[in-house]
Image (cartoon, rainbow, N blue to C red; front, top):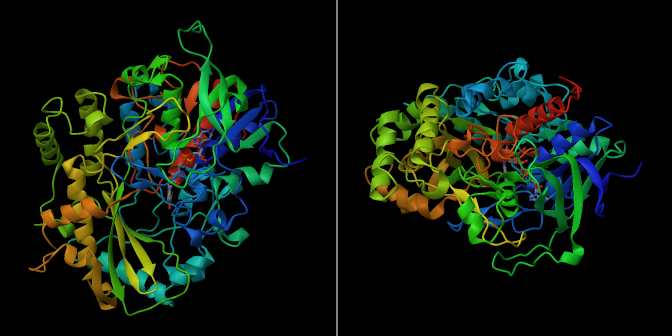
Length: 632
Ligand SMILES: Cc1cc2nc3c(=O)[nH]c(=O)nc-3n(C[C@H](O)[C@H](O)[C@H](O)COP(=O)(O)OP(=O)(O)OC[C@H]3O[C@@H](n4cnc5c(N)ncnc54)[C@H](O)[C@@H]3O)c2cc1C
C-alpha cells in the first residue's frame, strides 16, 4: 500500500474525524482513532513531511530549526522569538527531547477547575483513567543498563513506565557523552553534587523524575530511540511511520492549512453549534521575516473537507485558539472588531496562556570538551529550597504574601479591582482569577511542587551553566487574531513577569544558579561567570541585588516554548474553553486535543503530558461513539 501521507488534497471528501494539526497530539490521536478500520480519519498538517531531515532526526541539531520552514518562528508582543514545530510531528520533531512528567498532585488539581459532576472523567494522576496510565500507554521505556546506572547515575522506578507504547524514552548511548568518565560527564556530575550539598538547597537526588514526585535533582531520560540509532522518537516516527503503509482509513495531508471550521446553518436540537466541514488552503511559502507581507488564501486554491462525526483541533497552543477565533468561536468583542460572525461567545478562547521564561546563567571553564554534547541533568527545587538558597535573605514566601504582592501590583497598575491580579486580558474576571490562583497556591505551597527548573547546560566546549525558569507562572497572557487572513500570525502576549511573584521566582532561580557556580565541586570547574557577570554586580559577594537582577532578566529572558492553557479545560465561568471530555463549550462536535487544554502549567517539560492527554482523548472519543478502545 502506498503511504497515507499525501500532499494532494482530498477535495470535498467525507471523513468521520477531521483532525487539524499533525503534531504531537494530532498524530497520537489520529493513530488511535484510525486503529478502528471502520472509522475514517483525515489529519491536516500545515508543515511538510520532514521525517528524513537531520533537523528532526538528531537531537544534536536542537535549536537549528529556528528561522527555518520547520518552525513557526512566532514573535511575541514582548519581542521574544517563540518556537513551535511546523512539520509532521509538530513540536515533538524539533524539541529538546527531555522526558519528564509533573507532580502527581498537579494533575489531580486539574479536577478542581472542573464542574463537580465532571470530575469522574478521571483527569487526575492515578487510576485506570488517570494520566499516568495514559502517559505509560504512550511510552516504551528502555531501562538503564548496569553500565548506564554506574556511569550516568541513571535510575528509574519500573512501575512508573510503559513498555509497549509508540514513543521511546531512554538514557541513550549518546548521553554516555555525559558519563562520569568524560569531560562533559565530569561537569554534569559536579552540577548534581553541588545541588545536593549547597547549604539551604540540599536537593534530594531523586530516583525517577517521571514517577510523580519530581522535587529534587535528576538525571532525566530523553525521547530518543536506541533501536534507531538514538534518533528522535517524534510523534511522526512513533505513531505514523509504523502504520503508514497499512491503514487505508487514515489520510495525512501535508502542506495544507486549515483556515476555518464551518458550522451547520441551524443549531442542533441540543441548542449547540454543529461543525460540518473544514476549509483548507495550501500553506503559504515560509517567510523569513515576520514583517514580510502575509499572502492571503486565494479562493481558487481553497477546498472543503467534511466531518461526519467530529472536528478536532490539535494545532497547538497558539493555533488551536486562533483557528477557533477565525471560525467565530471566541471573545465576542474581538470577533466583532474583525467582522467575524459569532458562532459561540466564549471569552476564554486564547486567554489563560502560560509560558515559562528562560534565563541563562553561564560561566567559562578550562575543562574544554569539543565532543558533541547532550546533557540531561536538572534541578527542580520547591519554593522552600528555591528561596532558602536563591532568595535575598533566605525568607520563604507563603501563599498569603504572594497574593498580597500580586494585589498590590494590581492596584498600582490600575487593574479592574483591588483583588484582581495584574494579568490584563489574560483572565476573564477577578473571580475566575481568585479560583485559579487558589489552586496554584495549593500546588506551590501545600503540595510543594517544584517551582523552578535549573537545567544544566554545556553551552559550548568551554562554557557551562544553567538555563533557569519559573515553572508555574501566575502571569496570564493571550493570543488574539488580528485579521481575518488565516495566514496572518496572531498577536501573542506572553505577559511574562506581569505578576510580580514570577519575577521573584526568576530572580531566586538565577541567583541560585550563580550560587551553585560558586559551590564545590562545580566551583572547581568555573574560571569566570560570563552571564550575567558584571551586568549584575555583586560587590558584597552575596549574589547581587534584586533590582539589578530584574533589570538584566527583563533584557535577556527568552520565551520558554512551553505554552499551555489557551483553550483550557476548566469551567466556562473560569475562562474554560473545553469541558472534561475536551468538547468546546457551545458546540456539539468540536474538540481541542493538544497543549492548549492544559489548564495549569505542570512542573515538567510538556511532551510526555501532551501524549498522555492525546491518549486519554482517544479513549474519551471512542467511548462517546460506543467504540471499544483497543488496549484499555
Ligand atoms: C523548541 C522547543 C523545545 C521543547 N523542548 C521540550 C523538551 O525538551 N521536552 C518536552 O517534553 N517538551 C519540550 N517542548 C514542548 C513540547 O514539545 C510541546 O509542548 C508539545 O510538543 C506540544 O504538542 P501539541 O500537540 O500541543 O502541538 P504541536 O506538537 O506543536 O503540534 C501542532 C501542529 O499543528 C500544526 N498546525 C498549526 N496550525 C495549523 C493549521 N491551521 N492547519 C494545519 N496544521 C496546523 C503545526 O504545524 C504542528 O505540527 C519543546 C517545545 C519547543 C517548541
